[in-house]
Length: 184
Image (cartoon, rainbow, N blue to C red; front, side, top):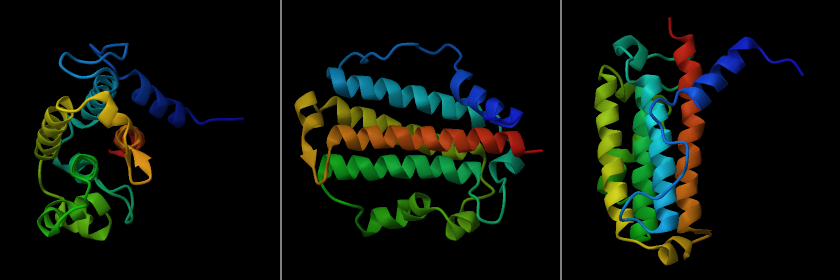
């Protein structure tokens, strides 16, 4: 099977852009074991996403690979919105209310409306939103224990829901790495 050089470049960026990273998964102080391990992995992924985008100028932040793509800025906002959704879903057992939908819905869905709305803001704007959301996630999950994490919540456990947040970040990290290689 043949792979292009660019695929290996993308994989390299995704897997090896870890500077000063921890190479093990361990719960930060104050968290139950399983929740802490998830926080450790979420923070590791967030750091790698940030390293890909943190030096983007405005043109790069608003870059569209094609007419159906999403900008790097919109994708960071999307990661934050997804995390907020799962905060509400797992911790409050509900979906967005009208106010939350107005604030986060476009970022959660992306698409044409996001391409119109999410532009002309620096990458730091989106990273600051992501930082605030993660702070809240960590605060809220610190109050829970591993019994809560293992509980069923609809068709999934709370643990699986947060695993999905993590895998979702990893998916978009790959997209952001690929896009960063396409920006002139």
